[in-house]
Image 1 (spheres, rainbow, N blue to C red):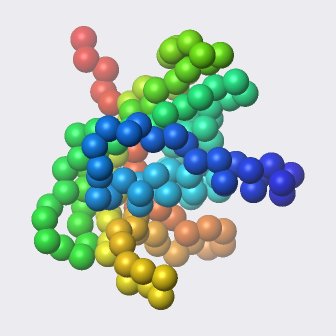
Image 2: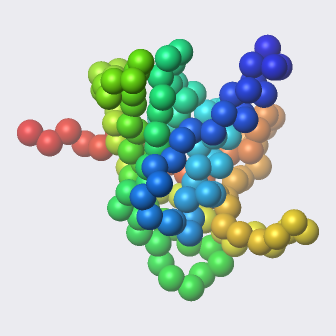
Length: 142
């Protein structure tokens, strides 16, 4: 069980090599953490972020909107999940292709360097910290 959790944590969701994103490393780290321990972002489940057996999942950040010049900022963006199963591009009707997200990003200074991170709050009672990233399925348009 511990080995499986370790492999899940080490298996990063693949990211699309489109354009560089100053905040993407923080977002992908939080997606990975949430997929592993479930720290409050219900839509970003293990299955959504990592797929099932035989799935290759690529996650891309789109429509990023962040204010400039702050050490703490509320950003909005879309996470797009692209899925291939056995080498064929597919969609999973049970899981959304896109999630609309909001997260508080903070500039973090640490001994090993500095960079952006997704803000986490202490656990409510016991358990893990809770992410500030919340994602929702986009509204259906008719």
